Each structure stands twice: as structure tokens, then as C-alpha cells.
Length: 397
Ligand SMILES: *[C@@H]1O[C@H](CO)[C@@H](O)[C@H](O)[C@H]1NC(C)=O
Ligand SMILES: *[C@@H]1O[C@H](CO)[C@@H](O)[C@H](O)[C@H]1NC(C)=O
Ligand SMILES: *[C@@H]1O[C@H](CO)[C@@H](O)[C@H](O)[C@H]1NC(C)=O
Image (tube, rainbow, N blue to C red; front, side, top):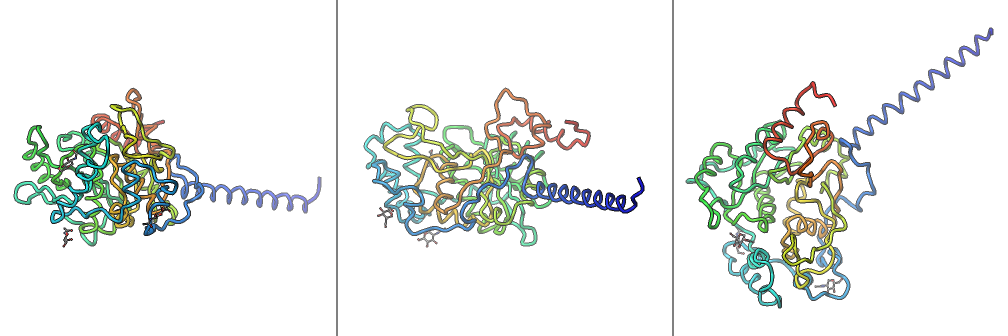
């Protein structure tokens, strides 16, 4: 066939086709960089606005619109202007809130002991820092020139030395833009051994323990969140993101950083990200885990991120503190944070890379972990092993 024009046409067509394929390929890989974390979720319908607001009447926000249930929490929330600020000069006030709850709830004496103890002191939220030996080991404020991009705030308990050390030696280790802090209650405890001297040594050695003088029990976990947020506003304002995790979590920090850096700014501004429970209801079995009596709370839980590990935008810290002053106390920390976000009009975002209930019999495999952001619970030894393998350039999956 002699047709130089046809040949010319054909080669032009092929070039165009190649160009189209190339453009599609590059824009797709760019897109997947921008929108997909490791196995990330595609952008879903975004919540109305990434900007928090706090209306004067929170009832509608918190779903309290129908006839008012008799349960104590619901009644309180409808009435609540603000909780007593609970600082030491108003100690009496915050205890009075608890005493009133005990008097008004008809079957208060049948509540589980930890729930009763929680309610009696729930409005007391201001505690001094527990400072080891004459103030040594005080956690330094952030330098103005060195505000962390990502603050790792790890909830621990005084006796969990091995868990903390494993975090320091693995995912919480020193890295640019990262700061690690552990959140703890008093090491003196109640009826247990006095861990004060050991914790004081650890604090002096690592300067990464934020300790407050309250009893370190699960129902006091919300205190750790709120006291951290207020510490940050005084000592480390301007953090871009805060990861709230437990000390038995394993975080794939480099992947998490990649994910956060690639977030569209409109997501990043109102971020509340993790494994989201959107249909949870209170459990009503007396004596069972997470039991909530009908006389205390009626209704469904808000959508909330599992307390095993979630991320918030640092700029929301002051907003959360304002919301918490107006949302009636609730015993479960993650549900409570969910309520505060709902009060602000912000919805949690789910990411499938957060697995906060890793099955005990499932071995944590570096090839699986490589594509995840946060898994728990993981034992300290396993954390070390995983971290080592994740760093290995020879890792073949
Ligand atoms: C807040 O709103 C609820 C329902 O929308 C209403 O019943 C209640 O009276 C309001 N509270 C105040 C203090 O205005
Ligand atoms: C505690 O409350 C009093 C009175 O409202 C106030 O003057 C004081 O500044 C508060 N202290 C703290 C630490 O918030
Ligand atoms: C939380 O800590 C405070 C202060 O130590 C204590 O009074 C309260 O009983 C603790 N809460 C629970 C549920 O034990």
C-alpha cells in the first residue's frame, strides 16, 4: 500500500492516543495520591461545612427535639447552660452537681460502682498537674519555632512502663514534625503500690509524661482529653493534627503523615477521623460491659470515632473545650467526644485503615500493616517486631 498521508495520519492518531493514555494515567495516579491513603476511602458526601459552630441551644444538634425523656442525662442536657467550671475555687460546685445527680436519679444506688463514682465527680474537670520531685521532669512547652505538625497523645496508665517504652522505640520515636506525649493520672493510685518514684524517674529521663492528680481509671479518661486540650492551648498552640491513641496501639506513622499531608484543606480543617461507629446504641444488660441504665440515658449514640485511636485537627481544640463545657457528662470517653463534635456540627470521617479491634488470634503481619494506619491492641514485643520489618527495604509482600 502506498499512502504516505495514511501513514502520517496513523502515526498522528497513535501519538494522540498515547498522549491521552499518558494524561489519564498521570492524573489518576495523582488523584490516588491526593485522595487515597493506604487503602483510603474515596471522598464521600462531605459534611455540610468544615467550620465548627456552637449554637446557644444545643438541643436540636444533639437530637433532643421530641418529648423530653425522663432519663437524667437528657434532662440535664436540655437544662444545661454550662457546667460549673470545676476549678479548685469552685470545687464545691462541681461536687454539688454530682450530689444532685445522686439525689435525683431514683435508682442511683443500683448503678454499678464505677458509674456512681463517675457521676459524683463528673463535673470536676480541673486538676493540677502531678509534678514529680520538686518540679523536675516538667514537660517542656513547644518552642515557637518548632510547633509539631502531628502530636501523638497516647493515653497510658502509670504501671504500663513496657507499653510506653515500646511506643518510644517504634512509631512514637523522634521524627521531624512529630511530638510524643503520654497522658496519665496520678501514679499514687488507690490501694495499689506507690509508683510515684518510678514514674518520677521515667518523667525525668524522657520528659514526655503529662500527669495530673486524679485517679487513673477508665471512667476518668475524658479528663485526659480535656486537660490535654487545655495544656496545648497554653503550651503548644498551633499543632496541625492531634492523634489520640491508647498505649497498645500500633501506628504506621509514615503512612499516616503521607495521608494527612495529602488531605484536601477543606477536610483537614474540620478533621475528626478514625474507625467510626454510626449506629451504636447503649447496652442495657446490667453487669455487662458498657452498661447504661435507662434512667441515665435514653436515645442512640451520636456517630463517633472509636477511642482506640482517632485524629482531630489541632485548630478544633478550643472549640472542643467550649463544647465540653456545655455537653452533660457521659461516662464513655469516645461517645462523649462524639457528642461534643456533634454539638459543634462536625461529623466524623471513617477511614478503613483504622482497626481498633484487632482479633487476638490474628498475627499482625507487616504486609497487612503496611497498608493500614492504626491497629490495636498490639503487644509491646509485637510492636517492636512489626516496626523493624516495616523499616526493612527488603520487605517483600
Ligand atoms: C431548646 O430547644 C428545645 C427544642 O428545640 C426546646 O424545647 C427548649 O425549650 C430550648 N431551650 C431553651 C433554653 O431555649
Ligand atoms: C477559677 O475560677 C475563678 C472564679 O471564677 C477564676 O477567677 C480563676 O481564674 C479560675 N482559675 C482557673 C485556673 O481557671
Ligand atoms: C476520677 O478522679 C477523681 C479525682 O481523683 C476521683 O474523685 C473520682 O472518683 C475518679 N472517678 C472514678 C470513676 O473513679
